[in-house]
Amino acid sequence: MTKAEIDLSAFAAELRAQCAAEIDARTEGHFNGRPWLREAFLTVPREHFVPDQIWWPTPRDDGLHHVIDRRERPRAWLKGVYRPRASLITQVADGAVRPEDGPTDAPFTSAVSCSAVVVDMLHYLDPAPADVAVEIGTGSGYSTALLAQRVPPENVVTVEIDTELAARARESLAGLGLRPTVIAGDGELGYPSRAPYTRIISTAAVREIPQAWLDQAAPGAVVVTPLFGPFGHDALLRLIADGQGGGEGRLVNGVAFMKVRGQRAERSFEKLGWPTVNGPWPPYGDYRVTVRDGRQKIQVIKPIVRRP
Image 1 (cartoon, rainbow, N blue to C red):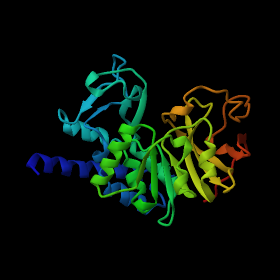
Image 2: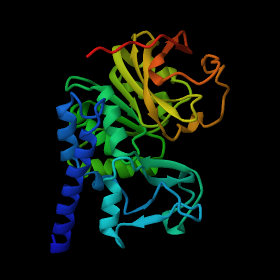
Image 3: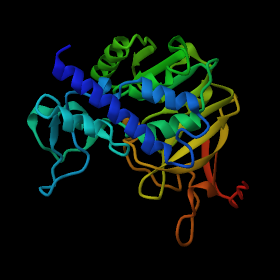
């Protein structure tokens, strides 16, 4: 390595530690009660999974999302990589727009999710070394790499609908010596060949929980996914599967994710099982989500009082 490369590597390690410290400040979810997750975060170099050219998620005054090029501004690029709440856009318009095309206002279709949200989702997934896990939406492979620090890579399956992204993630993971099963396919269908799964996580939002996920879930399996709701964004859902194609869970907090390709089309909330609410929507923790006989239902319930 050249001196410049060594300096940048040290800078990345410094930024990674700073990012972890910022996430430490969060009092719920995230690293709390998950020492393995903090260790994984400090072990896995996030920059290894980020392409050299990315679109910044916040538009400039011209309304366009501009490209940050690692080769031109390596330190600025690294700072972006380790912003805890920054989602780094890696694909626009399903790949029809390329970074070399420059600034864009086309719709985002893939990203390296922000560090804090990736960590929070894995917190609620709460995997153990004995689990068999399937991830929907491999993307860059960064979340897969963190998961594979806890669950042996041979017990991890990750499914990505975009063949180019799947190939890139497979290569990035292998570059760190990680070889989970990376499948190029439709994540809504899961991956039945390795079922049943005890942990299922989706890094893309759904309007309705795909039945295939629950059909492939073991009894007591934990399912974590962003679920689109009437809040104007998504809510993180943690659901416990019954092993018979159903399950029950609660919403955790608000998130924002791109939707799986098969569920981009709008559907009425009534058909998706949401209740009618007079006035403001209640807090996330006030909902129960159930799936029975292929039907999704969301109910507003009396919130549970948490005691210290």
